[in-house]
Image (cartoon, rainbow, N blue to C red):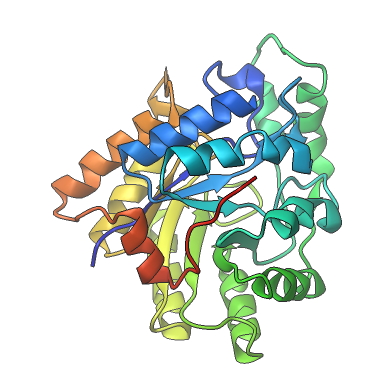
Length: 304
């Protein structure tokens, strides 16, 4: 089976002061997304940012600043977040996906602590006044996605034809996913994304990935699955997932570095690196159209 490379372009975790290469204006997000697609990413996992200061945004206007340009510049699958940021309400998080009705959305499978505050410990010159309080305040931050919230996203976006990247940060999230499958709210085989290395979720340790995979395969024999490891173990776990027959996700949302102490200058650099790794392991990278067929997506859209 061919391997799908996903790339998470900007996210809501890192801040502009952490890397000069983190895109946050519409032009930057679009350019980096198209570059990642041309490097081999079939799926582009997307968040919006305020173009004035890089703050995570739920604004339809901010999404409109880059979605049409990305769609016009490549044929990649545009995967809109429904997670947004932990500081947003569910209605805020769903405003843009409901408006644009993409072929794919992400969906976090549970409520959890989302502890970013260790990122603030490194001395730095903060570019914008929101960044340090945003990070340090995450010692009292809960990302809320209750069963009621999850059902709401599944029904609302499912009615628009979206399929999901089910983000599972812990073992319990797999059982929540099974619960909704048993209720008939998840048609077809799910696309499970194991999210590892976020403080508050499962640690990026090889034995954890093996256990997650074995459990998920038992619960969902026909699933498609992928791995992302936030931080320094990104490429190591991509290689492990590729060797185990899974798919991979990289990108500046998950890790700002290309190697120890070396900032990635673009999302495309990370895609190129992981492509080299998986191809050396004998895997063949799937195109966007092959990925659409594999995941049963409704097809490309025009964003206006």
